[in-house]
Amino acid sequence: MKREDFDLKTFIKEQTREIRQTVGDRKVLLALSGGVDSSVCAALLAKAIPGQLTCIFVDHGFMRLNEGDEVELAFADRGLNLIRVNAQERFLAKVKGVEEPEKKRKIIGEEFIRVFEEEAKKLGKIPFLAQGTIYPDLVESGGKYGATIKSHHNVGGLPENLDFEQLIEPLSAMYKDEVRVIGRRLKLPAALVNRQPFPGPGLAVRVIGEITKQKLDTLRHADAIFREELEKSKRRPSQYFAVLTDTMSVGIKGEKRTFDNVVALRAVETADFMKGKPTRISYPTLERVVERITSEVAEISRVVYDITPKPTGTVEWL
Image (cartoon, rainbow, N blue to C red; front, side, top):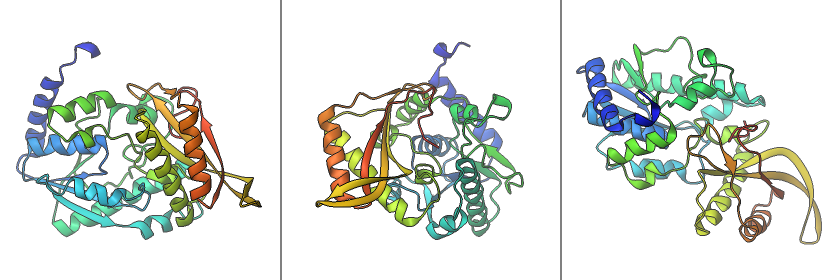
């Protein structure tokens, strides 16, 4: 069947049947991040096996400003057994001193699974682990799909001694735009379906170099300003965020010389996240963003805007 002829209604029906046949009357543990992919995966599983799904949201400390609370609130009344695990200190300790991006992804991916295993033991034997893996995740993580561009925590970061009988990934043949359509068909709220992508390792792959709590807090503040100003301008790129670089720059604040961080802004337009082009943000909007970040975030002295397309660059920096 050609891709353009793919029937998403039939896909939902077939996946629902396959999940029921695979799971039977047993339970499933879902890695819920609150992003589009895992949210749609949760809705599909809830439709297929109501009452058998437990969703675990791991707050690893790499979320955007106030995002952990927002995720918990969004799923509070969805009829799911949702467990929030606050593991910020644990994850920070694991990546202390680590600068290489692939190593960060591997460490965080494995720690995710370890958390799930521990929570699963508290709940009794749960044989199935579900993830919202989509096709671009598999392609970019390499292996049998080609060269590794970057490992995704739900693909390249999985440890070999996974303590579950089987992995369930019902969206692994789908592209991002198709996942959104599936979410709408499953009647998920627009706020979830239209949410911009966020990597599994979160801000850990948007901080260049070693990760510290101070760096994360600095990035959270700058990122929130950028997203707020773009949303006020009614310009909604496919994905938009800030990156804390490992470069320092001389600046002037209050007529005094400063030597602080450089933050990079990234906004892209794309249909399937396999290719993308930089968003043409208006200069007045960019000027407001720069003025706010440099005046409201004490640790930042300079702001740059990334206009690299995909390819040659990936959407994320790391």
